[in-house]
Length: 293
Image 1 (cartoon, rainbow, N blue to C red):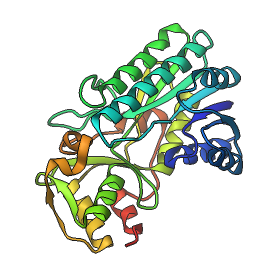
Image 2: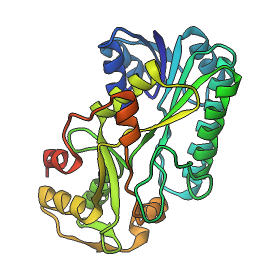
Image 3: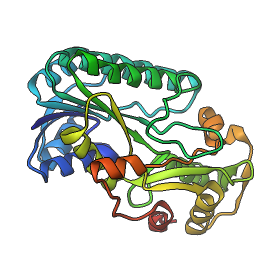
C-alpha cells in the first residue's frame, strides 16, 4: 500500500514508517517543517509539506493514498487550554481525513489512549472516555470508528500511558523531564497506581497489522506491560539520574495531574490473539535503564 502518515517523524511515527517500509509499503509523510521533511526523506518516505491544521493538505494526502495512519498530536500539556487546543486541532484533522475516505473501503488507522476502568485492567471492548481533560479525543476517535458504516475501514490503536524507546517517551518521559527540572523524581499519591506501557518498535508493528488486517470499526490495545507501579518507575528514574525519589503534590504534574493519579492498567489479550501481535522489545523498567544523568 501507499500509506499517508501524519506524525511520522515523532518517537512512534518514525518507528511506524520504518516498519511500513520494511514490509513492502511506501509512505507519504506529513511534514510541518524543513527539518521534518528532511527526516522523512532520510527515512525513505516522501514528504508532504503541511501541518495538522492544514486541512486541504490532509485531504490531498488521504486522496493520494491507499490507506492512512494518523499519529500527529500537538503534545502541549502545559495548561488545560493548551490540551484543549491540541484536542480540537486533532479532532478537525480526523474529521477531514475520514470525510476524504468515505465510500472508498480504504483503511484509516488512528490512535488514542487506553481507557481507565476503575478496579480492573481495561480491555479492547471498553469505550473511550468522552469527558475529562482529553474527552474530546475520545469523541473524535469514536466518530472515526463510526465511519465503518460509511465505507471506511476505520480502526483505532489505543496506546498506553508510556510509549518508550531508549528510556524516553510518554508519561514516564514526562516524569523524567519534571525530575530533571525539579531535582526530585516524584510520583503522585502513594505511587501504587499502575501505568501500562509499550516499546515504540512493538507499537509500530501493531499499527502495520491494523492497517493490513483490522476489520472496520475495531479497537486494539498496544500494551506490552499491563501496568507498572508509578513509584517503581520513579525509582528507576531517580536512581539513573541520581535524584531523591518521593511523593509530590498533584500540581507538580500540571494539567495531567488528575490522569497521572489514576490506577489505569490495561490488557492486550484480544489484540494478541486476534492479530497475532506479540511484543518483543524491552519492558519500560528495562528500557529506563538507558537514561543518562
